[in-house]
Image (tube, rainbow, N blue to C red; front, side, top):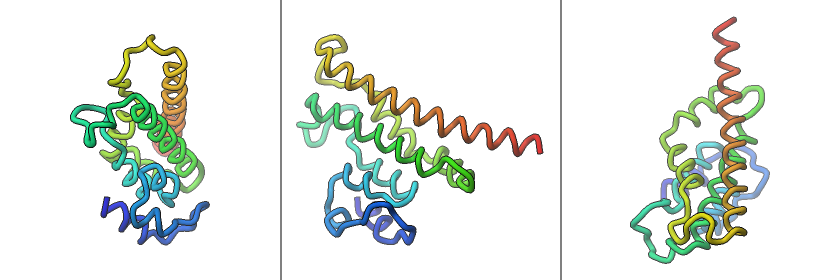
Length: 157
């Protein structure tokens, strides 16, 4: 977490959200994801999302509520990455971000099912989970698609 705080505090880029003292000195991973001013800071914040597998530390993170929050937060982070990294001038930063090992953790946080219930037990929660996964897949399709187009255009030029 201290690396995340240093990265957030040292970032010089403009941000649509002010980074508050609370976010830097002890905010939640959700707040850090929301306030991250750069893809690097966002990936660092995303690394603080609780792992989707055992052992859960603290143990209450195994509860279904927290499992859904994990998926929601990771899906939101991927959506923010898409907004940051799609467009002209972002190709090298997008490539670095997509190759970053922290992307795997982020994708696993969305994709891993809840350990608190099986699919089909609660239709409303299954719909929530499906929405988070669809959002994440859309974000990944845009990010990797944009990267593939950029690479193809460079290769044919």
